[in-house]
Length: 255
Image (cartoon, rainbow, N blue to C red; front, side):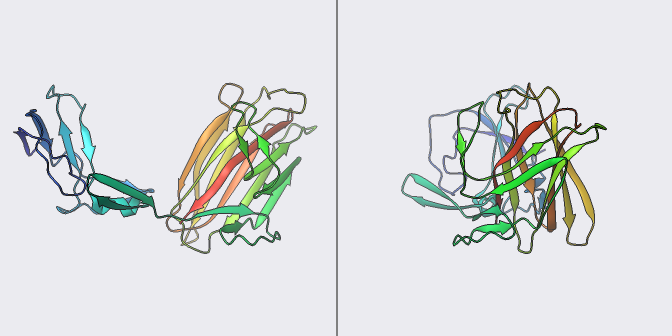
């Protein structure tokens, strides 16, 4: 392990400018971080883009800070620049929102939902449409994929599935799974699950992850890497024993 003590902190590590500060003993470890994943894809680490681990406590515990070089920032969706003592990070990725397959919009930053399949449920895709109010936070949304899950006599799953073909290259998907209240102000006692399935460029089906919202945890953050993915499906369901309103709020595909 290559570790040594120095008496100053390089204030501009990311952008290559070093400024001397009051003497502080810190340890710098060039070998602490050897693997970096960006949107689920492993990046090649070389001597020119290797992260640096810095620890000012020197207590032998993992309490330090990892600094990433500027060469990795474009991979994270940012274009870095600097003017004097000010650093600017500009988001490089464009946002694309789901719309119904047959909807027309002058906005070009949209991606059509190819299929919506339901069992004992209603479903809709809304882009810049009717306001949905988060009854928990009070926030309002005009972009969402929502479902009204119904009750089934045989108590089989009530579900809605949204499928999108990704013809262009997107880096990731993000949104928030939300469990709403009924028209009577009731929160369902049973959980609602979101199952995310991916199909990669070779046609292989990948069961990516299952998110759950309930009376105790009504929101879940969704962040899905999409490199080398050709399609994605979102399946919202409950056990069919009671009605439930659920939605993916601000669903967005980032290029």
